[in-house]
Image 1 (cartoon, rainbow, N blue to C red):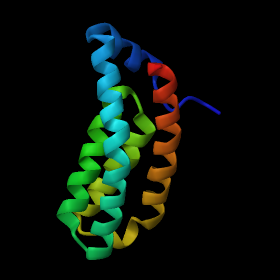
Image 2 (image 1 turned 60 degrees about the horizontal axis):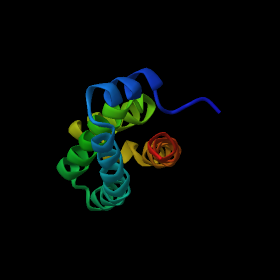
Image 3 (image 1 turned 90 degrees about the vertical axis):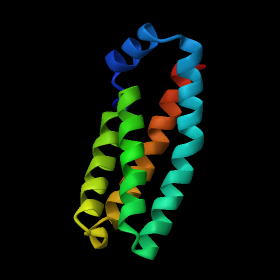
Image 4 (image 1 turned 45 degrees about the horizontal axis):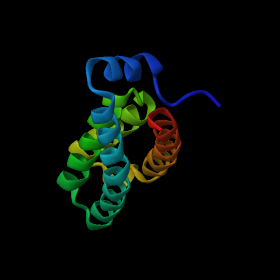
Length: 113
């Protein structure tokens, strides 16, 4: 299976910043993202476009920081749909985001251990 993390981006982050700090960032992301995804599901059920958009934006930005560009792209697409008030079109993409996050999480754990 191809990597979900762009190693050049991740390696650059490690070189520019203290590796211990990067590990803390990764830990925070791995704690926060599952809750954010759950909150996105709640926002979807509630029809709360703005909360959904804000959560997708956060995942998009954080994923890009670590070089998880597929995850970032999925979150960007969800953010756009929410911005356009098209939450009725996000169900399958939200599942793909969650599955991709699980792969990204495993790789990030491996990279920071």
